[in-house]
Length: 387
Image (tube, rainbow, N blue to C red; front, side, top):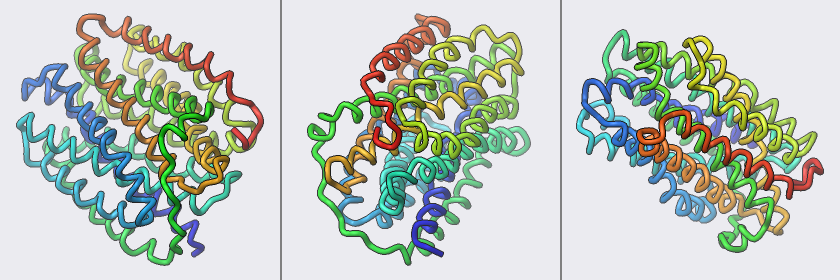
């Protein structure tokens, strides 16, 4: 099998399992709130700790990838991942769960940054949108299956059972990262790109902000809507998992398609459409009168999120090449930094602002952010493949 397809399969699997384990927590939030007595602030901190750890570990992950190549950092990340999953299975204390979530975030940085660099190393600019879209489909399938599987296991077995399954999946992931990439040729490692030099490029600033905004929106919904659905409609963890599963399904199925679209019609055009649609959709959850209506709305939000996220990774990779460099890990470490910063902000809004402001005002604030970035995005050229 050609090395680029090995890279594609390994990265798909790595992103899928990492995201699957992250989303195992979503249907458990009502349990943490009702049975363990966690406050909305503590739930927000629990979600935010992942983002903060990812934020801190992202830059070192980029430097390690540039120095050693993608394979070794991807293997190192599995060590933290298996410890965090075991802690989730065997702990009910907030402090230990916080440690587990923090380790999970640090391990995520050692999956995402080298994984995206692996793809950028093996695929040219005109194919990266499609290739990265395929790997993100693996992640989005994790978003789909994570809440659904966890909700089912929690309903029929125990609150520890999703994490027992997670340990088995990590073993499978380890085999894939350890053995399946051994024939991928080593590419000469480039020097890191300083953040100030990277940020001096206007398209880079827009793509970083777009990624941050998209993850802010998703994390806000993930940290607030499960408890809202439980209290508004008295849903079970399984039903909450299925509702969030539709969001993930739309995001997963459309990632390769919209990734290819960014290669064909231009990344700016795809991004602007997503921001315009999200401005309207993000304010609608409190107005949904039934769980089915909420599921359809979250499906539409999942699709729209793909329009925002898909242009970012190939856009950043293209800018790295425009700088005369192949330090893709540096570019993707900064992009992952924006990703994790968005997760942290989304958790912060969900944990702190939802109390005094309420759901409607908080979502209205997020809609205003979409409008602001939409206006800013018109500084991007719409020429395909170059921006």
